[in-house]
Image (cartoon, rainbow over all chains, first blue to last red; front, side, top):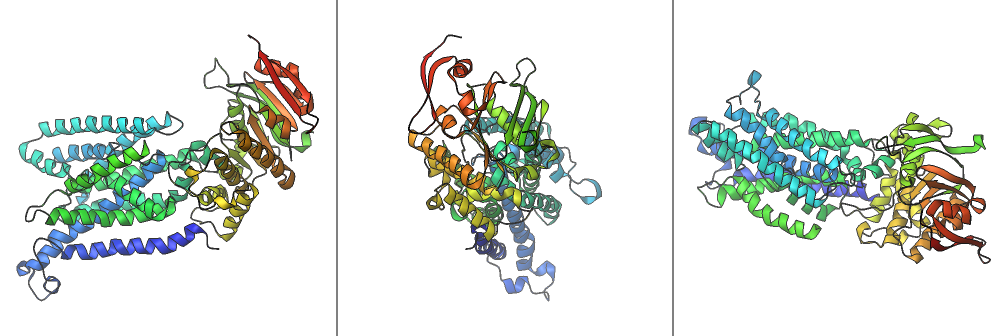
Length: 335
Length: 266
């Protein structure tokens, strides 16, 4: 008589992890220009002449790694926000958390402060600050209604926050000079062309930290999703758990947005499909969503790199094409 | 009686704003193995009182003690392994199965990264069997009927393996058959498992049928308290609900029956 969750942890998670790993390994070999892996890894060729290696290591691998990190972070923070607000339609993008993060990052980029102290970029921290402001507003709204946020309030709050932050972003762009404005426009579309490993390394510690918090929270999120009183009656320190959830989801979203801009809908598509496959237990849903989110965004990025080759679409356009209709379908189902 | 009180409240007050207290000096004692009913009209403070007894609402004044120890001295988890709560209604945002729902009752007994083991699953299945819901184990909780849901939530509270079970109007949204099921279930859990039960209710049949003691609450104050046979009288029903009622003993069951006659204008 094996307990259900233990069985699922051992059977399901290795599959999801293997899927994500396969995506990371295969995606850099695919693209608009065919490359030879043998040549790319041939150390005897000088770097400057080895076009295959340059494509693999400079153009594609950082992009795939960024997609994995961003997809995992956005999907997992979607799961956490959904449990925290007790509503499966909550996501970093629809709640305005992503645009809060984008505003923070924009302010730093437009002010020309993006290479901060000691060579560590200040963009991730600025977008974390932006996302925490947005999450704090949503959390405050949720706390003022004891029974959890209704879908109506949730969506209206998201629309309001999104347009508010968008207006501020436009204002910053308006004040910025032309080249900076051009840089930010593409970034705001959601773009994984990170151009190197530096930005990934800068965002990585924040993602690792938030995932550690998610791991601590996983079982409490099950109980929290029953409501604050029910969680307290089962021994959860509700205020502490909610604060940790809110901080860590902001941290993961901030890191993801700092890397790739506000890419939408990952936080709803991925957790929803994962729940259909593995059930609702957050101890399985969280890690499975992180793996699936990584693979999913790598897949979307592959489409954006190859669909209109040699033109490269910002990946945010691809996720929005899939996510917009998906979100509407979920909205009809849940209300 | 003082020594045998398992759960005791002394001069509890609670107020969201100072001008309108929800509880205004409530004292009560629950001895081990008792079934205590809390009766009162809407807004009389029943839910708040249960929250204070369970430690999820911190009273503005007064103390609640469990085995003589103030609730504030317990850790959240420590308290949750002694007192379980069944809320009026349970809505889920996600599609948990019945077994997952009941296993959540094991939360206070597990360490930070601990996963429920076979013993926890056995406890959960035993709790489901106790509420006659073993056959529902694999079902999605949200697809159950109101009565089935309430039985499963009670099973989750049983799986929590506590001394005390607090229930907030457990039959309020149920049909007559389901009301009877829950009443019989609570009586049986008390008799067979020795669970101490405090139940708030509008259901006078439930109160007279299973509660051996009653606490009548109005405007946050105790109007009367004591053994059911003594407390459930026409005078007290009038004082509590502004309703003239005929209270008599039902020969077949030996329970008091309350027949409401007409409402008095207060």
